[in-house]
Image (cartoon, rainbow over all chains, first blue to last red; front, side, top):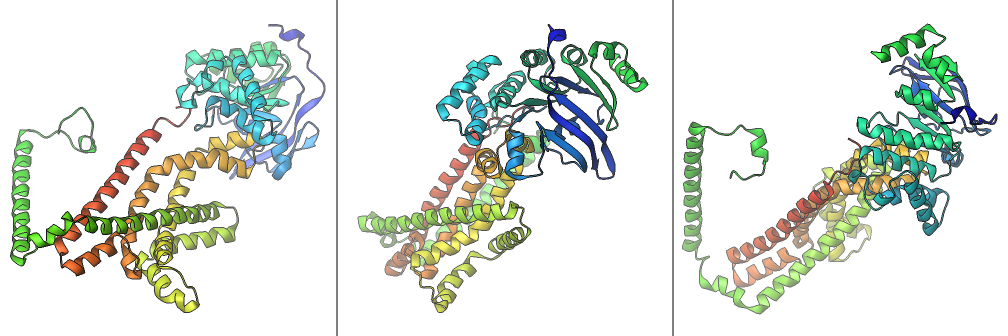
Length: 254
Length: 276
């Protein structure tokens, strides 16, 4: 673990500016601004219902916003069409429930988007996919279908699927929350490895030890607001600056 | 039967006790006796009216009778298959219109689906048989039966397909769009293949209905199994024997289709959903 020596760039990849969002009459995001720089690992924590997942999902417009601006690598996120699809393809996403394509073999799960979106030739797409599957440790599962894999294996395939698009950043929306405890480690290991290689990551998680170890920056969200933000995760977890963060962390200990 | 399988009956009812078992025994015995009496009565009536006479049955020892029925059966299959293909194509279009974001298209397809489902097949046949020619639409007997049967099934096919599309978890679409895939690709490469698998059994069940609807072919004078059976009957006056044989043929085909549907349902029931 050489977290301290990792170089985080100054170049912003994801910028959220004054994001507001309502679900009906409930405001779930309140004037949220957040910038994620190249190579940075931003971990979003907070109580359930605080808007963490919603925030994560607004970044590639799986959730629409009421006001504010989302900028991906210098380009404002459009509301629809080709440009939206193009920007989405640059931001990978890993879901809580894996969402592997149930009818496709593991290998095809990874190749379908590169072939469809980037028009990568089949042979090349499959070679790259095999390489990625091996990297996340499921190379020998390539010809099975998702239902034949364990949750941990499925989630690692989902990470490989996201990587196949050569994304500029990957969003992780509670990637281990649907996993049996004994499978959480294998997924976190793959994510740690990615972080070490310099991937830009936004992670929504409940795994505090993992957050502490991997984060370049911790964002504590409560009631749709960023309550505390820290570039020193150790300090944050040991001694948060705000009372609300302190209460949240203390509640987790019990 | 108390095999190892759990049947619907085992789920719905608790196992019978001694009293209930006795009641079941006597109820079964009484029903069987009643059925046997009814069957005997029917056979007796046929005997009295002479339908069991050898001359009505001997036609089935002749090769030409079977060849004639086989020809009709080929006609039935032709109409059933063509209708199914046309119904599937129309159902697919109606379904896509029904789920499209265009309000007008949505409304139009909903209306067409309701018409297709609500109007009896026979009315569609009368339309093509009696009314369409007045509009200058001259169709062969084959299309006069194939089109109405197809139109009549299209609405159900559309709704079956739509239920399949709705059953595909939202996460599948979300995963596809976050990878940069666009509308048409998402639908045809991710959503529809899964939706189709879900509804194969229902589509096969609809095939049975299409097959039964083809018996209306006699209305337009198309030579299907039913029509040829009628010809045999009027030639030989062999009402019972010919209808019985025709009925057995229809039962066998539909039984095979139902078996197929169950088999396919079993194949596709392997856990298709990721996660838990």
